[in-house]
Amino acid sequence: MKIRKKTTLNVVKNTEDSTDAVIDQVLEELRKEDEEESSGSTENHMMESKKKIRKKRIAIGIAAVVVVTAAFLVIQMQTYSTARISTTYACDDSGNNSYLQFSNGVLKYSRDGIAFLDRKGEERWNQPYQIKSPIVATYYDKAIVVADKGGNDMLVLDNEGLKGELHANLPIKKVSVSAQGIVCAVLGDEGSPKIVCYDAAGNILVELTTSLKGTGYPMDASMSEDGKMLLVSYLCIENNKIVTKVVYYDFDGKKNNVQDYEVTSDRYEDVAAAEVFFMNKKESAVICDDKILFYRGEKTPKLTETVLLNKKIKSVFHDQKYVGLILKNEGKAGYELCLFNTSGKKLLSQEFVGDYSNVKIDQGQVMMYDGKKCRVFAKNGLEKFDGEMSEPIYEMFPVVGVNKYVVMSPNGMNVIRFVK
Image (cartoon, rainbow, N blue to C red):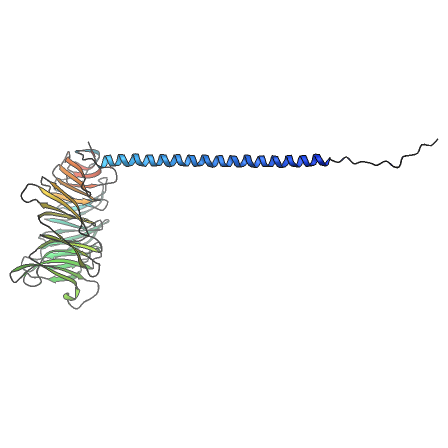
C-alpha cells in the first residue's frame, strides 16, 4: 500500500507576535523618556549648582571689597605721628646739595653740578658745572633749566641729561622753561630789564625790552608747555597808581612788531602780581597780593575766575590741577592752608600753627616740612601726618603704596611709611 504525501499542509514562518511588538515599542519609548527626564534633571541640577556657586563667589567678593574698603578707610582716616623707615638707599652728600622732585626721581644739585637720581638713589646722569648761585626751574617732569642767579650761564636738561648750554649778556634774575626746553629769562638791572627767550641751542627767539614807565617792570614770566606762549605780569605806575598788567604773547608765527604778538592784555589797579604760571595746556594762574586770577585758553587766554583773598599770602605752591596758598591769620597766631581748583573752588581750608619753609602738593597731598617736623594733608582736609622724622627733610613726595613716601635726608634716600 502506498502512503501519499499530504499536500494541504501550510508551512507557518517563525514571526514575532504583533502584541509583543507593540509592548516592546511602548517600553522603548518609556525608556527614552526616562533617559531624557534624567538627563534634563541632571542639567537643571548642574545649572542650579553653578548659580549657587556664582552667588557665593559674588557674596564673598562683596564681603572682601567691604572689608578692604573698611580697612582702607580706617588707615586713611587716621592722623599718624610716626614715620618708620622701611628702606634706605645711600647717596653721596657733601652737605651742600639741594634736592628737587623731578619725573620718576630726584634732582640733586649744588654749585658744582646737577645729577638725576632714580628711586633707588642711583645716578642716571650727572652734569658738572661751576655756578655760584644755582636756581632750578622745571616744567613738571619734562624739562629743567639751571641758571646762575646774578650771573650769565644757563643749562637746559631733560630726563636723558644735557640738552644745551646758554649764555646771557645780562645778569639773570628769573627763569622758566617749557616742556620742549625753550627757556624764558628775565635779565638786567632794576632800571631796564629784558625778557629773552632761547631755544636749547642758545638761539634767541624773542627779546622784549621793558621799563617801569613804559611797558612796566616784569614781576614774573612763565612759558607754556609747547613754548609758543609767554605769560608776563608787569608792574606799572600810572597817574601815581600801582597797576598790574597781565599780558599773554603768542609767538606761533612771524609778526611785524612785539605788539602784534599780544593776544591778551588785562590791567588791574592797586595790586601787584608777584607770581604767574601755566598749570597745563589750557589753564594758567596769576597770583596777586589780594586775589588769584584764573585764565583759560590755548590761543587767546581769558579770565574765567577771580578768587578774592582777605589775608596776606605767605607762600604759593601748585601742580597741574590745584593752586595752594599759605595765608597769615590776622588777629591770632598761625596760618591758613588753602587749596583751590582751576574753577576757583576752595577745596581745603585748614588752620595750623608753626612755620614750615617748604610746602608742596603732589598726588592731591599737601606736604609741609621744616627741619625734621612735617605735616601732610589730603586735599579733602584730612590730616594724614603730624610729627617728626628721624632726620632733617630735604625733599619728600608720595609713592605707590599705603602711606608710603620717599624722603631725602642727610642719610640718603629713605622709603618711609606713616605708622601709629
